[in-house]
Image (tube, rainbow, N blue to C red; front, side, top):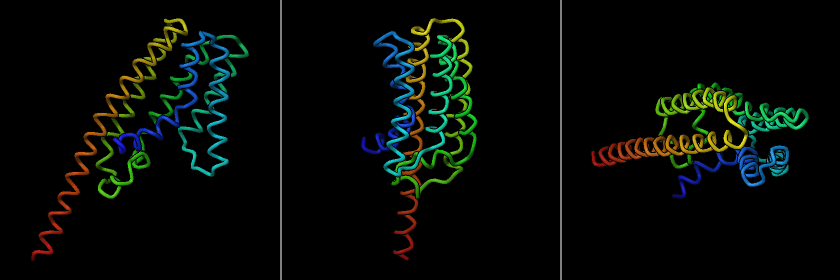
Length: 195
């Protein structure tokens, strides 16, 4: 379980402002308040990382930029459509970034890194990219047809469920690959030492 949490932690931290926004929108039903506090959460998150001199990933910077730009546009125009379309931009940008081979290496637990190559991770990176592009298209349909509360619930349920399922499949496959490579290395080492 420790390795699952270690693998999921960076993703959850990258999405903190989005999580704050959705939770506040559902609990308060106040779109402006949820947007403003989502922006504040993103700024606080990045500020804490800067103060602690922790690395800040591209996804975090992009998420913060989109939250600030699209959130501000929604607040100033009192039109929730800007924030509702923000995930489409984010999903598209993240999907494009995930097309780069090896991006998953940063998210691997340290114990797994020595056993995996870019080729081992590439199919899973492309699977995640495909999910992001599909989510982008789905969000447009939801944003144009649903009110903000129904949109946020639908997008959240789909987003959470699809990511949990793909994360579980990816985690299980990568763990199996690590075990296979580790066992091969150990068997070769034992054979070499016996010879």
